[in-house]
Length: 265
Image (tube, rainbow, N blue to C red; front, side, top):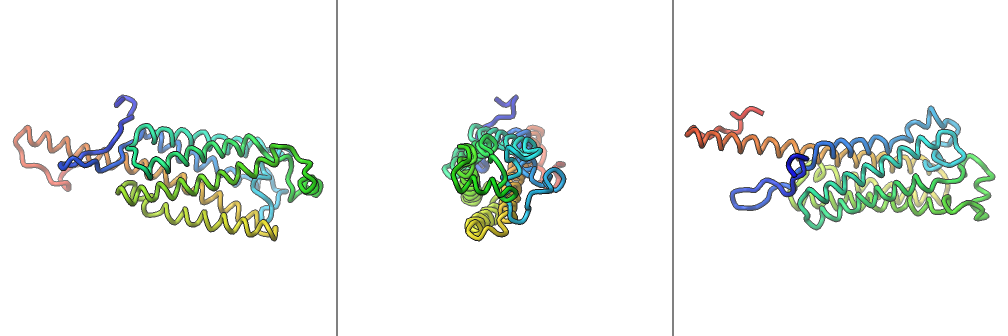
């Protein structure tokens, strides 16, 4: 369906080998970048939720049902999940299906589902802000949504790490997405370290808020990196197509093939 910009596969070299993963509609890169922005809604807490503890409090407490403006953070998470699902599904449909790439896009899709789960199963209250809420947690007097939120949050981090590692491996192994090949590993490692650090800090209960917010920042950067990779690949494909068309026109006209430096962008 070229009229939609949906093309499977990449440019074919003279030897018959496909050199690129193919391209996605430019809107897909825009949606991935938008997801990275909407997932950073916690940055609004200084204005909307100044009472919550940024140092020791969970970021998830911002969307607790009893907190003011909780719908803003829930809307940000839900939007991010939907956009991530659209981006991953589009990539699975339109790009080449190589094992590591399929794993990466599949777990990005599952990341989107998990983020929607985070928004759909919020906390009842903010334990770091309300002593009664913390006591209710210890006495198991909270709702299923409050308890299940820990599962969805863990799934978000796990799926994101696997997706980022898999896409980075695909970028390096198949020669795709240079920006992912260069920076994806570092972001994946940073996410693993921050996740392990958060688990350790859960024991002491200190600095937990900062660690969790750092995790979210890394996830936002990962989504922006994926958007950059998809956009760059599309731009490279268009340049290659333009040069191929120019060579074809030169051959028909009987002119000397132009060097890359002579072809206008």
